[in-house]
Length: 93
Image (cartoon, rainbow, N blue to C red; front, side, top):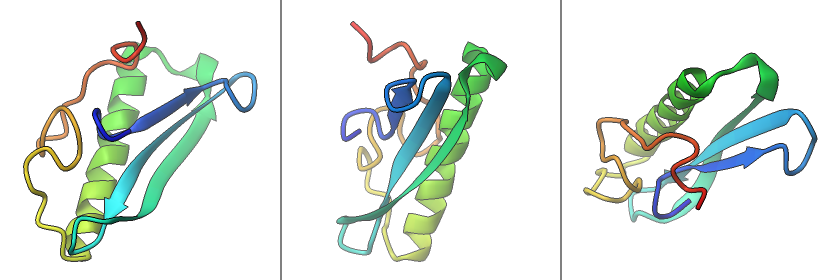
């Protein structure tokens, strides 16, 4: 999660269910919570998963800013503050 700014669980906990989560940081930059969603894997294609990842990261960033986090570059992982992220398969070797 630290490097890319989100975590993805593709049917690892429950078969057929994918989860995406992103960290919420406080004013000191410490991770104090997370925002996450789960969905039926077969209902989303790669583009849909990318959209979900962007929305989860954006929501975590918005909450973090409300908590006083200044969003220092790199604090939400690869992709930066604009919410762009590598595709869901980018972390798989």
